[in-house]
Image 1 (cartoon, one colour):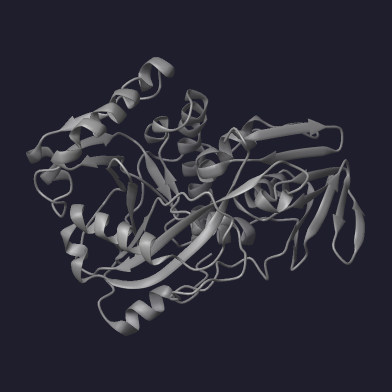
Image 2: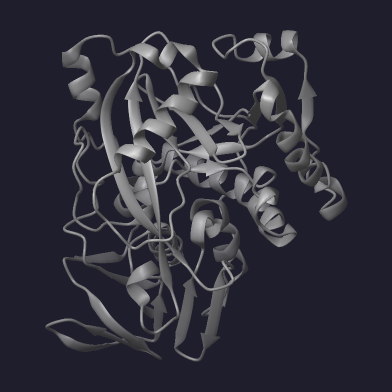
Length: 393
């Protein structure tokens, strides 16, 4: 058994703590957040700094990411699909009742006026099988096929199905990983100022010794790494009666807007990518552009209610590529940019950690996902219950 200290309780920090503690190591995690839970929902204002993974929509889109990332990202992301499914199945077997993972593919959409730009994007995505044999090609859909898959979408859109892409329910997954990490000690409200081999320097406490120190602080790792924060904004809508089974992306010359369905008739809309470290609330421009683009492909959102807005910072390095540094007593992983959920389990699986390579995720579960729609939230009371903190794990 090794004593392992982890700086940062985002996606990587929690996944590492969950996996390492299950392997029998003594794990201590430090994070400046006040606790393991997601920040409050139902607010249009900003909130204290928290893990970017809570804000992210949790899309697992290795094929779609070929639009702006290299083939290695796609290959790692494809592996992560199976690993996240296995993690979700294990957590469910241990009593977590929240839906954590869905896998029904995703859709790329384009209006007729934007077909030229969309075809240029799809030409890049069509190369997926040549980059890795396991990656499927996008499947063009005619109008009838699109209507059969997602009848709520605007008629006449150009569409492509990206088979087997998936999504993680980011907030519930982060909570579940913390709750189900045996032998992990969580030090909330504790900021790590510096990480050195076998040492975490904790604010107001000084150095804390470990056999291995792991730095996964995201933007908080500055200035140890040349990181920058890239602002992302999301809007949550509540739209009873609007049905969407799989995430969709709208291909537009200026926007790559995504719409992600969530349990409780909620929809997460996002894709803003702003070179700024401003953590203030969502801007009017972003909110209007995101919601207008979303309504243009999903008309039923016209009567949706805005229930939450949130902005956060993605950690990015100058080349926008993930960075892993390992030496005796020290491991740093950072710069996952917009690919935190997509890459985390595949990166963890590859790591060499004491006393042996970190392998042995639980055996794969059955293919497919779980139902997103256990019931409908139509009343204000039910909506309030949906948005209120409820730890089902």
